Length: 472
Image (tube, rainbow, N blue to C red; front, side):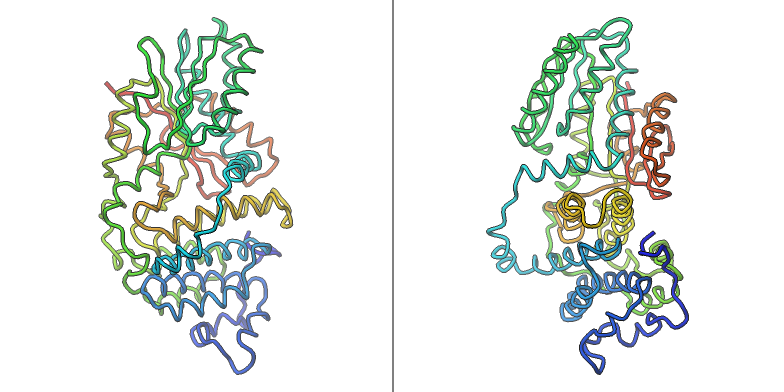
């Protein structure tokens, strides 16, 4: 999966056998790192993962000299234009370097003071993600079906979209509602987004569609970040049947409970380097390495911090308060789409290991979707995935927003806030499977989990979709 020729086995004559002796030595008798250029593709990929884990360990314990040497070696092997492993290694290396720089506030601020974040580019790259991957399209189909079923017979329907960035989902819903045997309801959509121009574009598209279908329609704009949202501004009225949609947003609220605990990005306890190297050498494939790296004690999260810390549990004052406020609005259904991976660990090594799994699968999806020379592919990898990786790896405290968690954690949170799970219907699952089949790629799969849906790349879970109702 991760190599040019599809193979990543390590032969008996592999240079990997000598890693413990030479992996962090800057000169081996000839020109520095000359031997790196002679690595075969399968050995190169395995060694890149070895270097990333080694570098992360040195960053975590504050050994910056060895971290610098590892980053230098990575720069000779990784490339944002190479194969899957080379590309993903480029962004993880950049994130580790960014974490180091953050420990010197003055240098970090000076280097970033003139950087421009173009809003239109951010919007464009998210549209590319929607277009090139089936994940959000499948989530939209499932969400719309859950909403239609919950709103059967209702004459006044209000939908609150907590991340109103894409009109296609609601455009499709308008078309479905227009075909109802009892006729379409009066529909009001409240869109929440921090960019007014995004909301205006969505309002224009949906208003035109509603007029074409002759559906009574209103679009209400709320310009706000989710963490600053005033629930009163949603203007939920008595007599309306309410549905709430949240797409990859709720996890950002978990950052707020960590703000008082801000620490330097450096300063974790030591990772056993000998265990790490032995684990690398004992793996037959790169996939085996990633699978084994949490089961062979390559690192012990317990050595860095207690696994029962507030960040790794379901306790969250901000999240609990927000979910209870939504419960108070009495929605008939709330549909939630989230990344299905544990990127909210307390330690750097936990998060790096989990995110390597997750983003390797997403980069692999792009390998089957777009050419390596594609500018669109480069933008998605750098501006979307690369920025998410950087946030997971380089940031701490309230700055770390990408706190993705597994579906079972969301079950605990919603149950604690007074919600009951609504099992997704057979018809919703059928539509989702048909949509995936239209991509003509066997790698995309969905599976049912406790009445919810997990969307996968092969066997790697990537996104979850779940539906909820108020439990009275």
